[in-house]
Amino acid sequence: MIVALIMRETGSRETRTSLGFLWTLIEPIFAVILLAFAFSLIQRTPRLGTNFQLYYVTGVLPFHLFAHVAGRVATSIRYSANLLGFPSVTVVDILFSRFILNVFTNTLVFLIAAGGVVAWYGLRVDPDPYRVAMSLSMAAALGLGLGTMNSVLFLASSAYETFWGVCMRPMTLLAGVMFPITDLPSYFFDYLKWLPMAHLVAEMRKAFYPAVDASFVSPGYVFAIAGATFVIGMLGLHRFVFDFLERR
Image (tube, rainbow, N blue to C red; front, side, top):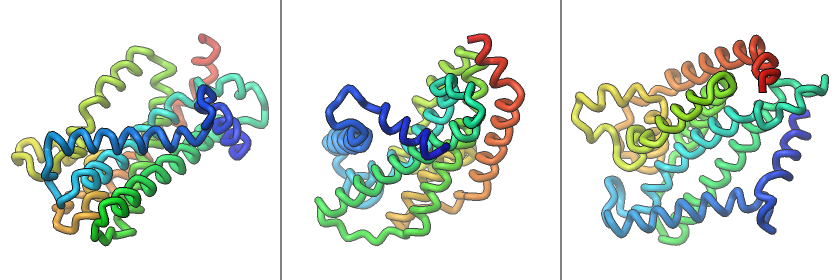
């Protein structure tokens, strides 16, 4: 059932273009490269290393994986509400079909973009594969957990959905995408280090830049938040999902 839902999602995406599903890969890669180039004109020397494009990709794409997975999972019930009338389709099927597809897509985007930057500029980097995998795993888990919890809250309150969108806009800065949060004064860092998104960004940066201070990174902390929010979301869906959908 999950495979069937993934195929349905794949076939329904980006039907406005002749490229179809491939556009979901091309669009973010093109956008990231374009933004990286634009920022490199403003700030020619990155905070780490010598290549701004790689610095940007290693920060923004792990965060983008989290944000995209969280957003897609959060709206999955509303998107596929009509399928819940079939006995063979469950809430878990709907959540995990979107989760798997978006993790796969965004991981592929990261590998293509990072590999392309390294090859294009002839950079000599030796990324730590364990840290790369850990960063992407934290991003995926956190996206699933918060997305599942938000799937309930979005159905309960459209005001909360707007509030969440507003809160996510400055998060790229607060999570250390543009600059390491360890460079900030201690009274800022002591608060920002509790953001789970900051951990996955710092872990990816550490994989490419060994000199990065990632001593505050705790995968256990991120996975604990992801697990707790996932359980809360599943309990809420089990209790309220059909009540919410009946009111639509």
